[in-house]
Length: 370
Image 1: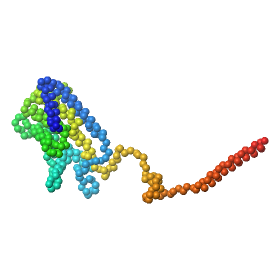
Image 2 (image 1 turned 90 degrees about the vertical axis):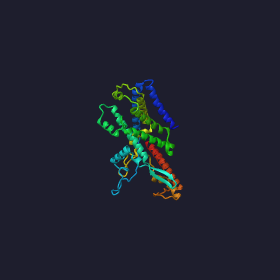
Image 3 (image 1 turned 90 degrees about the horizontal axis):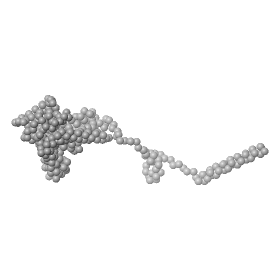
C-alpha cells in the first residue's frame, strides 16, 4: 500500500487537471489562479524553513572529519575532508552540492560466506547525479518561456542538451536522463530488500510526482502537440501579472498542475534537502578548534561550590573515615564547663558591684545636697 497509495494519489491529481480543463474548461483556475497560489506557498514555505534552520543555535563545532586535521607543519592536512578555513569549507560544499562527493565515496557492506565484504556503491551516485543535473538543466531551459528576448546562455544550453539530434523535434538528453534517473531511484527502493523495508509512502510520492511531471512534459513535446506561442504568451503574462489563459490542450494543464503540487509539497518534504544542505553544521563548519577557542553561547553563570569549601564543611567526617584531606584543618578547642561557670560568676559579680557603687554614689550626693 505504501507504493500503490502514492501512485493513485498522483493519478488522481492528473485526472483532476484533465477533467478541470477538458470537459469543464477551467483554464483560468488551472492556468492562472493555482500557479500564483502554488508559487506563493512555495516562497513562504521555503522562507519559513530557512529561517527556522538559521535561528537554530549550533553551540559546538561538529564538522564531519574524514581526513587529517591541521596540526603540525610537517603533517599534511586534508583541506577538503577536514577544512580549517573558509576557503576549504567552500571547496568542500561546492563538491558536495555539485558532484555529491560524499555519496561518491559511499561503500556498500554485504555479508558473505567468508565474512563481510565491502564494495563500491557508485550506481547510486551515478543515478542521483544524472537525475539532479537533468532536473537543473530542464528548469533552466524552461526560463525561455518567461523571458523575451531569450538570453544567449539559454540558447547555448539548449544546443548542448540537444546535440545528438534524432529527428524532429529535437530529443533532449535531459528528458531521457531525468526519466532514467527517477526510474533507477524507484527500482532501487523496490528491488533492494533493506531499502524497501525502510521506505515509506512519503519516499515514493515525490518519485511518482516527478515522474508524472516528466512524462506529461515528454508527451506534450513529442506526441501531443501544443501551441507553444500560446504557452509563451501565458508564461509572459504570469510574469508581468497580465496573464491570459489561451492554451486549450488539457495535457499542458496536467503538466502545470503537477508542477504546482510539487511547489506546494516541496518546502515540507524531504526534497527540502536542496536548501538544507547549506545549513548542515557537519558540512558548513571549519574544523579549527585547535586554533580558535569556541565558547558555548548557552553557558550562563552558576553558583559554584568548590571542593575546598566542601572539605572545610566535612573534614572531620572525612578524617574519621580515613579519607585523604587536601588542606590543613585545626579543630577549635571548646573551653571547659567549670571555667565557663567561673567566668559567668565573675561577670555577674562585676555587674552587681557596679550597681551597688552607683547606688552609694547617688545616696552620698543626696545627703550633701540636704
